[in-house]
Image (cartoon, rainbow, N blue to C red; front, side):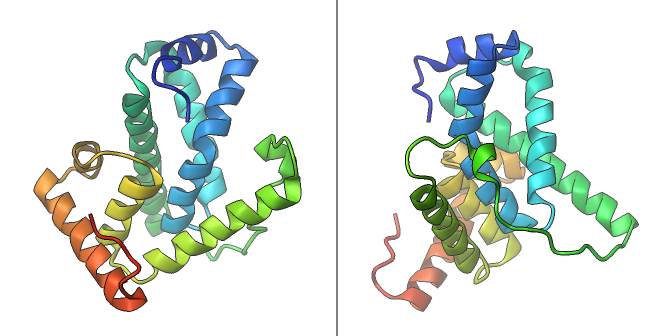
Length: 189
């Protein structure tokens, strides 16, 4: 992630169209954004992520806040795009053809060993998918926003439009369920 002190400068530069700043934001926030979207809507995640980044690009000049605020803003946009997608899909039922689930190495903008980066990222996505498959939709969304998105209970509650206590209960029940399934190695905080 981008350091809290550096974020306002990076966002300001990105709002002016500076390529380096846009790249830095994308590299920092695209992996958790994709994990969240892939866990929620695997077949449309890449398209939804693209829509999210277009919305972010349009709103960067008006954004002000810290790193946690940026993450909250990003995942709020993602959730709204997800809801819009589900509404459109419900109105226009079609059977999608499964596409390639791997991102291209160029898209990730990797330095270092691309093979190890790809394996690490795919392993994380497989783990996220395996965990959320065991949970209800609300539990999965709460855990994804808290763990993958790195958001606080208050931010998650605001995004999900639920009371903070309800988010805590959803997360606690989800983690308890995972602990029962996977054993005592799961830490519940």
